[in-house]
Image 1: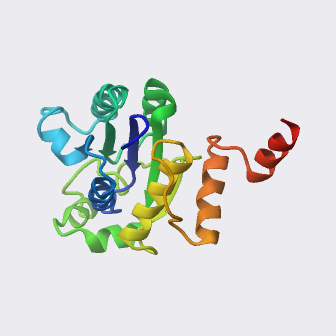
Image 2: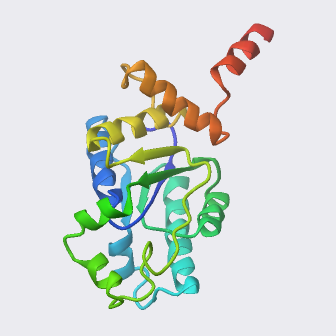
Length: 215
């Protein structure tokens, strides 16, 4: 069981793999007997919680802030809330981070645009490139990648299992999940740790060792 609730916030272009990794994470958490898990998928939210909103900057921000509000409620009650939404604007994601606080874990699901286009079974990118869909993120509307996310997943280079394992390790290092058997190779574990240090969530191992010596 998780030690506390949290929000795993996946951000990235359409087709980058957000929903796929989110589904894999849910399955992995259930293996660990974490049952209090809820997923807020961007497409599903738009047909329910945010029905009627368009794709202007104001409407996009409203959609993301609504998702953030629900995630904060869930996390406050011990739930692992998983949000998988493009959430293209950095300032809006930062507002959600401020609202949720320490339990917010930003995960940048990174994939080159050409890979996202190849994965697009709905043909949305093709329509956007033909200007048949206006305000399409990554084509005719901007996407602002996170500057210091807790984790970067390069889904064009790693399997879903590897991405999920990195996420589980982040949750262990942030004391959300109890630590189990080693999950990653040493160099991968070091890379995950380094991202959390860069995000300001952990002290470097050298700093941690120095603190132990001084205590």
